[in-house]
Image 1 (spheres, rainbow, N blue to C red):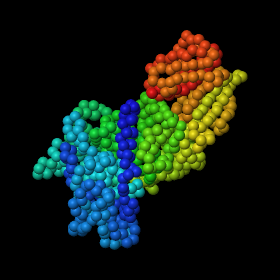
Image 2: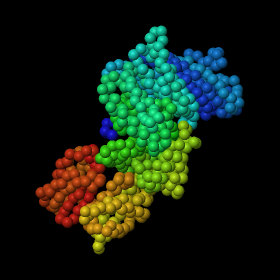
Image 3: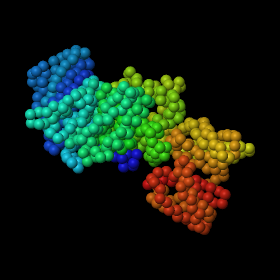
Image 4: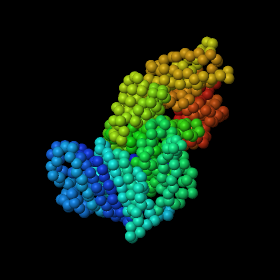
Length: 619
């Protein structure tokens, strides 16, 4: 993914959390179960006011149930509340709508309709926004996690999904309204306004309910699961983007087929998938129709993966946000792995490796859900979380990993419900046949990552000895057991070997059957470990000074009392990028100019037959 697209995605999702600590939402929501809601709204994208109603059918979950409560911004106006055809009293204050109810027993069902109006854009948390694109005004919603209360009466918890949901959105002529599920009909009123009637027959969590209105152009293409089985993909695109959208959008068809094969059937197959452009950067995985800034490959893959992980199965607590974002980030990597050239996959993985290891601390599991930046940390909830899944795949093997992921995705207990980290762990343990508690403790619940220094040297015959040392970036974990893959080359041959690294310092000898001249560390990028790979004898690392680090285009290298003979820069895969034979004298720093993309690199400093390799960053 281009860096600007990735940053926009993180920003758009992180900004949705900016009010998490301050917003008020209903604790009473666990007293009833939402069975059905129908949202009726009139939206003019050029006018900052809406009118609407919400019909709700529910079932009491507690005995002597006597009050129905919804979330709704107090600055919106509740015009009336209807039960059994009659207007009934209500209280709307402190962002709560409370409706007195005749006492009913658990299991009893009821129905109520709330009529309301107002300007939803006054809400500080921007659940409903207005803007303009090149050819017209637009309004759109972004409710994750608790923004829905700013624009419609709703229930905002992570334990009750709306079992079935309909939307009827009235808009001025010339506009279209994007929504959930299937577009059943478009009605024309006497004033030539249009009503878009959407029908969704899958459970949906409140924050994934969404609508966007503007002068969309549209087109439909199809993903074919078999010669007799297909599903529509609906595109709502700004008119000014249509000249490229029809070719970009087709890439999502292969993504759907790929994820369908690995994770189980697309979760909303009887309805649709689609994209609707909106007025902000990045995207949001609204159920059956993701809202997108554009149709970038990574953005499409990320939001599509959310249809399984985030929509079908939703994290049961913001502590477990990685079950949404880590999965979407890693399955984007899988889309690159299967559908794009190897080099693009490597770049994608390295970007997340660099981000995840840019600081030494932090767990994937969120302990402080009052911290917005912590919940939606791009480094931890996205990058490190996705790398944890990649390492799990390496730890237990492709067969057990994908079997466990598919069983998790198809679980009758979790389908269209909520999941916690322990649920994922259980399904992976069932497919693997062994406990993964130690792995989850170290990589999910605790902090940091390993730092490795590996020295390889030739021994008698064809043997190669690896001297492996490890330290941890954070004190919460003293040691990370690793399976380290190497590619050995020499005499026109190559082979791949795996070392089981089980002690902080150990020597391991391997005989590949040929004389080794080159060693490549972790060729498939399995490990989230900062690593220095050295050959043979090495100089004391503390005697070489490299600055500035991070670098913006120049490196100065200083080695006391010795003359530097050669400098070489290479990437994490061991590929040489820059070589320099600088003229220098003892105690004189050497200047190395470079033109490198942002990321992690290594600098090899050669002095006679001695060498030292140091990591550095480019910003």
